[in-house]
Image (spheres, one colour):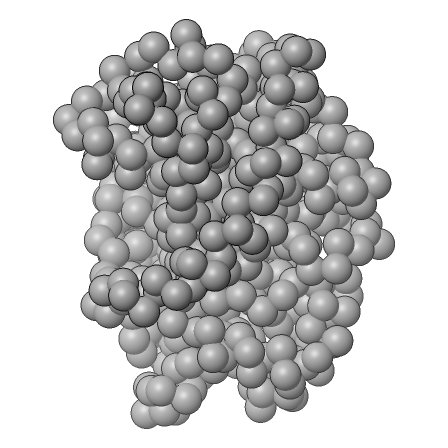
Length: 498
């Protein structure tokens, strides 16, 4: 059998998947690496850690699988979005990478809004938010001019990793769409944006489709990974685009719910005509000539992890969630807003913070745990609410990530989203999407759609309970009031946070 590899370069670890032609996972390996938070709001990584982690993960993958490296035909990548990697003329990083969850660039976001005005949404299709790449470039330019002067070009995280494996610099459209420098509909770097901030065209890498063939494994990378120099390399895509591919979100009418550290609601768009007025993100898909709209909850799975680490440290998630199935929808009048690191959709607010509303003496830890799960799902439902308000039909949602591992949570999603929620048989997220790009590029399938029919396997479908959905609909409208009722208080408290 022949194989392909999907590399998922995440925020805390890199995961590699070895996938056979029948779509089965032959082996997987993961390597973690550190995050650096030297100042409040800062989040950085050393690009060399990505390379070391990936080469180590690939070596482990080959060793554990026992597969002959000559039978591995292709490799592709999924990567954390928006992270700024500045390179000198020798393609060496001039500083640590500034990541997607770094919030130091509020001032630069306001500068972008003032400078570009209406062109911002018309061209880039997205608002200026701290997570995007252009504000990071401007921050370095203004605060570290000596460092910026040494920079010849920029890349995003997975593109730097691919550079180290091939020697070539490219950026795919799905990842470039998250820079605030791409003409999303025109699929080219925007001269309007670059000229407005005096960024030369040469600073930006050449653009390719996510499935584009970009070379083979270099001799140096072959020695460090064990892959052969005949292994074909394909560009890969942004983690959310690859997550959509890996979940089979490849045609109109399909929506994705992904609950990881952050949470995503993503819906397929066949063309660039949809106009959400910047209320949700609008990016190029990993599928050629397609797009997707996306809402984000910053602290989705992270909210549940925070709750466990704070109130159930040392317990498994299953132990912590014991008994929640016996608690009626609404947690006996207890609401939780998952704004514990700020929020993205529909409230782009770095200062807002979370709340438990309606705390009663009768509430147990199980009530609080269920309220956290409901609050996360309510937040995700805000994006679905926006899609429906814009005329989109959302009736089938494929759920992946941590939220897809618990049957009670999957049923909760169906009830709150008022849609059928589909779990996958062998959910591998963005890494599978990357592997699918390599499989199509290697000629195994004529299209991603055809590949999805083999690689993406549906398991159980959860259907909304009419009575429970009605109750959640009422609670959701109350939940939507919490932001406006607590915003001023939270902004006042911001000055007292360390």
